[in-house]
Image (cartoon, rainbow, N blue to C red; front, side, top):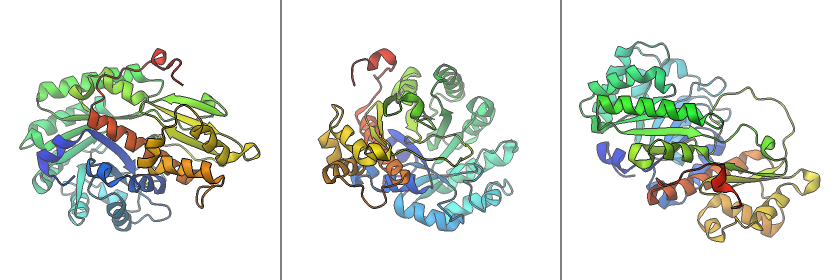
Length: 360
């Protein structure tokens, strides 16, 4: 988006949150230009493969993503080498603000650190508002952070310059408590200022899909349902983690089974086949020959087109013999779908198991 300040925030219809990891950056980079032009994503700065220098990673982010809101990834194993200095509240998080100021097109998220005092956080938000014309505040613990969020809303020069992002994390199996939390926090923020602009982030893509079907399965995009339940677009901007499991976990050494995901508007379909049962080629064929396949979508989504080419050619393309690039394909398809829904207005969708019976 070639916009600034309140005009930029007003234009956001869908907020994808991604990390500076290879698959997520590639999936986003392969979006159509018109899709990119309608988005201003939230990107968490951390490691990129073996590169852990923040300045080098941010160069790649700017190259592949373009203008964005920049957050800081502090998860163990994913953080860049300078994360401790960048999230230091000294001089109102000056190191963090300076990093963004030295990179055109980047608007820093006001860091809300666990255990940090409120004053440097508030001053940071004010200084970002002044320097960048807009400030995003992301809370991963909305209920616990409510007091700080209310203080920031009351302190800024103009509430129209602020976007508060409530990141509810992984919501599959926990939609009721997450909905209750979101409703309570949104209500409290609107009492503080009725004009408060709020986005709600969530993800329901699981860490592993095999529990939902060994060879194939359908996973409802629960975050869409959650967004509808808390008021749809009238209550908050829809956001998600771009079909990525959002919580930290310890990686384990295990044999992976070839799997391809295909993104629908409100669900993910996956096909999973071992190498002796056709592997990725068989997965692609099953998806293309299913009633869910949309040839027109493959014309506008790089990820779907990779599935189509794999089926037509009967071979796995270079780089697609392992999961990483298939994750990129899923991210690409998911963002294309959700961007279209956001632009069309998806406020009427209400999920639930009964809505899905017989559709697949």
